[in-house]
Amino acid sequence: MLVNGKKTNLRDIRPTDFDKILKWQKNKLLTYFVCNKLPMSIKECEIRYSEAFKLLNQIFGIEDKNGKFIGEIEIDHIKWKDKQAELFLYIGEEELWGKGYGFDALKTFLDYIFNVRNFKYIYLRVYEHNARAIKCYEKCGFKKRGILKFNKDKIDSDNLILMDIKPTNLKK
Image (cartoon, rainbow, N blue to C red):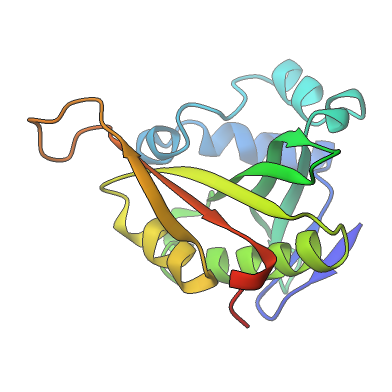
């Protein structure tokens, strides 16, 4: 599967991507922002990106226009009947953070998920202090819906902002 954006393409994750994913897993800031969700071994990669796992989620590799694998975007906790799911996105190449690749991949993915797959509702959780990600999500049309407060007294705590989007909120 290939979906083309302006700066990125979305495609299936390949076994040749596993080494890069394991390399990214060693980036402490990235693994913090993605809540340690990245696989830690080839075996975990094989399970996470297997055909059987696709019944539970839809994961796409993000590549730049030169075909370089740079991250992934996923929906999971899918309610197939209601066409609802939770979004997960990361750019693994730290030197590409803040360069518009995540924004382009997200816009491309949302267009696909709403207009081709006919989903009705996508939500996400993001750390309150991850300003770059929040700005990206809002730019695409996500709205803040609430905060899960884990430590009210601490600045830069691990509080999570809940955000969501419907096809009618999608920004072109």
